[in-house]
Amino acid sequence: MPPRHVAERTGRTEVQDYITGRLGDAQATLVLDDTQVIKKGTRSVGVAHQHCGATGDVRNCQVMVMLIYAAEAGHTFYDRRLYLPAAWAGDAERRHDAGVPEEITFATDPQLGIAMLETALAWGLPFAWLAADADYGKDPALRAFTTPCPTCSPCR
Image (tube, rainbow, N blue to C red; front, side):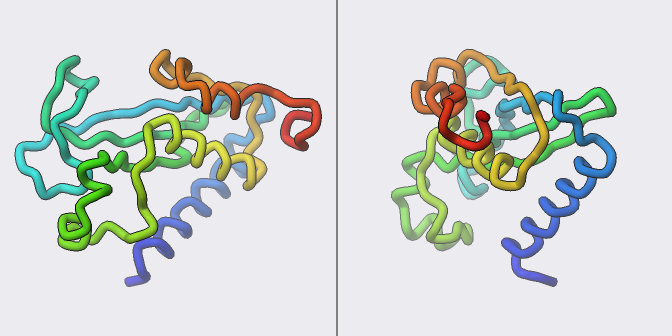
């Protein structure tokens, strides 16, 4: 079995090939959103007492930020990142016990979204629109990242 990072890269490549071959559309929309999974324990990576959109309150859960590709021909997940709360990011023993790689650091949901958008842009993913809810829309860094500029190649 290949190392996890190799398997994830291979899986993303397969998704990219699927998008190119079946869904690729210059007018497609990327949807940036998150989902939560309610958890009872404390050992699952990233689990913490935090806002859970599934229930509308604060619960013990994991949060995953997702980037979804939606085109006229269909839709698919493009990328996803597990949110690692600050308490997890700063606890070396807990991270080690759970197998969290050292290069994974604390990042907000919008920061994770920016990282996924950077990957999509670097790959040349064809799209025209980005949709997200107000929690992402109120983030100044994400808004700045998605504001067209006259000098960068993706915006021209």
